[in-house]
Structures are given as C-alpha cells and as structure tokens.
View 1 (cartoon, each protein chain N blue to C red):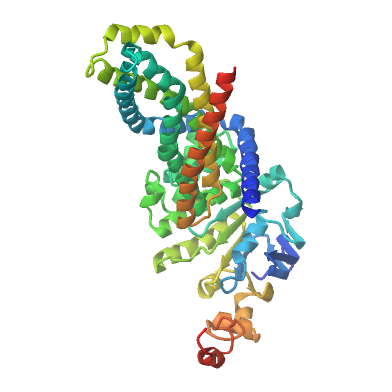
View 2 (spheres, rainbow over the protein chains, first blue to last red):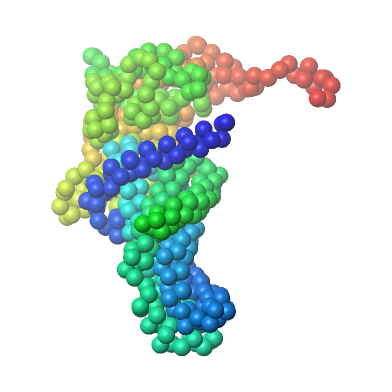
Length: 250
Length: 272
C-alpha cells in the first residue's frame, strides 16, 4: 500500500513543481541569453550522439524494411516505410531517450551539484529565485531543443535508410523518394512534432525536478541522475503509447 | 566598544524554539546583534549555529518565539517581503558558494545584475572596487574552480558586500583556512565593519580568532545562549560549559562519549 501512495505523492510533487516552473518561465525570458545558452547546452551538445544514432537507426530500418517488404514484392515502398517509421515513431522516441541520457543527466547533475555546493541557497539568500534563474531557462531550453534534435535525427535517419536501401540492396532511387513524397503527409509530420514537444516537456521536467530536489551530497546527486534517466524513459514510452493511440483514434 | 547607551538591536531573538523531527535545536534562545557591532555566535559543532542563520534569513520558520531583523518579524513575511529584507543582508557561506559557471567578476556582479539596472561601465567600476577591497581585482577573470579556499571566500565576501548591505552574516568564515588567509579574512571582517558601519554576525567556533574583533559574544549550548558578553567576560566565566568551550577541554558538560549502554555490561554480554 505504501509504494503506490509514495508514487502518487511523488507525482503530486512533480506536478506542483511544474506549476512553479511554468510560473517563472515568462519572467525568465527577460534574460534571453540564459535561454540561448541552455538551448546550446541541451541541443548543440547532444547533436553528435543524435546524428550518429539517427544514421544507424536509419541504416537498420533500410535493412529490416527491405527484408520485410521484399517478401510482399513491394520493396519500392522502402522509402515511405522508413520515413513514416522515423517521423511518427522512432525519431521522437529515440531522440527523447538519447536526450534523457545525454542532456537530462547533465542537467540533473549540474543543478544537483549547485544544490550540494550551496549555490542555490546562496541565490535564495541574494533574493534571486533559483527556479527563475536556474530551472526555468533549462526547462525551456530542453523543450526547444527536443523537436530540433528530432528533426535532425529524422533527416539523418532517412539518409541512412537511403544509403542502405538504394546504395546497398538496390531499391530504385526514384521510387524510394517519389513514394515518400507522395505518402508522407503533413499530419504525419505534425504527429512527430507534437510527440517530440511532449517528450521535451517530460524529459526536461524530470531532469530539473530531480536536480533541484537532489540530496546535497555526492551520492544524492548520483542517485538523482539515475532517477532522471529511469523516469524520463518510462514517461517517454508511456506518453508515446497514449499519444499514438490518440492520433490513431482521431 | 565603550559606548554608554547600547545601540539599537538589528537582530533580536527572543525565546526562540525550533525542533527538527521532534529533536529540539533551540529551546528558549535569546540573542541580540546591535547596530555597528560585530556579534560572535559560538558553540560546539551541532549546536545549531547554521540553523540559526537559516532562521534569520527566513529559509526556515521557528516553532515559537520572536525573531526580528530590522524590526520585521521574519517568520511572518511573505516571499516578496522576505526577498526585500534579504537585499539588505549580505551572507558569506562557509564554502563561498560561488556560481561555478560564472567568472569571479560575474559572481560579484551577480546581485547587481539581478536587482539593479545599472549601466555596464558603472557596474564594472563597482565590481572592481569591491574586488579591490578584498585584494582580488587581479583575479577578476579567473574561474571559481581556479581559486584557493581563502581566495574563494574573499570573492564571496566581495559579492556579499556588493549591494552595500546593512547587515553582514558570516557562516564559519575561518574553517579550513591557512593562517595567512585566516588573518586576511579576520582583518577584512573588522575593516568592513568599521569602515562601512555595518552590523556583523559571525558564526564560528574559532574562539581565539573571533575574540580579537568581536564586540559581543554568545555561546550556544543545549539550545540556548549559555553565556553572553565581551570575549574577555566569556573567558572569565565560571560556568563549566563556558569554561570547557573557551579552554577547548575534551570532556566536560559536552561529553566526550556519545551516550551508550554500560561499557562493562556491553563487553561481557553473550554474543547476539
């Protein structure tokens, strides 16, 4: 009985913290330089890992997609299969998981370390709200960075699928691209975009929440970092199911 | 030091009670810091000295009793009023608590950027003046990570005075410093107090050092101030707990041993 109650209480605390952060998002925009720095931290610094993984995922899609489609004699649909798989599903989800592992952990450990070294307390004592100065720009930075990273992941992924599909296994280049152009619709892109925005909110929120509430010790910061990855991953996959169901219904 | 009428109390603590998870930290604490004076708050480790500072700054609320700063009851203040009060107070943290992602210059400029809209040239001059006061103008471009412990504390001191506070609070300013850095910090506390006319509260357990500059000292033990007076008066006090602390005796009213079952019984008891 205790575990579900604790989980419920934790959800409540996260929700209250979200309200507090949202309340400070607008005032924090008065210092746009802080926000730009955080978009750079969360976005640009995750670029290499996102591009690399996008390439591999696209290449795997090329191989697996070709193997599956040729059984039905429709290997010319490889382009559209890879694009839809990436844009609607794999792009947002894998980017969110990578984001949690790369940017999320960095955010948590940075804020947790600020807590452990009294920097957050010092801000409070200087009459500066750390939620406005530290948390809100990082939260917003993560939300802005996530769809951008997802878009890059998708583009590189499609390139990877093309590399294998057209370059290696011999799907015709013209049908690869033309079918993709004909079949991928704006609503598919919107679905991926909305998903990645939701994942951005979830992953950034968990990262700043765990960092801000970390025990002010080395062990506490380590534990908080682990919790960030676990809860971001679970939340991302849960949200993914709910959003996919909602989009298919509509 | 030889004023006839006592100056007004900037910080006034009356019958303060505060407990953490049922364990009383303060149980009827009385204490006052008077304008323009250096007040030392001393006590063995674990007597709640840092907790007292957190109470003073309104970070936590007392269970009972009065605690006023500049005449305002701290516990009754809402966040905006509390933040207004904090702008009049400078605080030096034990480890400096400098922002690790900002340079020394930007650390000192931090409160000015947060609370004022000063033009950049004026802000720069103000920051350089404060850094000059602590002897670190030459370190303005350094990162906090590259500073020694003593230098980091001096930067934090420059940051604490950059808003020209009326009250300066020092949390264990001498801990972990070499004799030269310690002497520098000690001299700075005295000089800042005298030249800026501010009120200072120094929480410490370094009896010798603080006795040289404090006007008034309080010794905390068992949740209350067990002794108060000038450092000389404290040294002459006959109470065993005061004597133990001032002389640095290992055993006394503050026991060497943590309470435990009878030694002989525990050694001889059959294996559990």
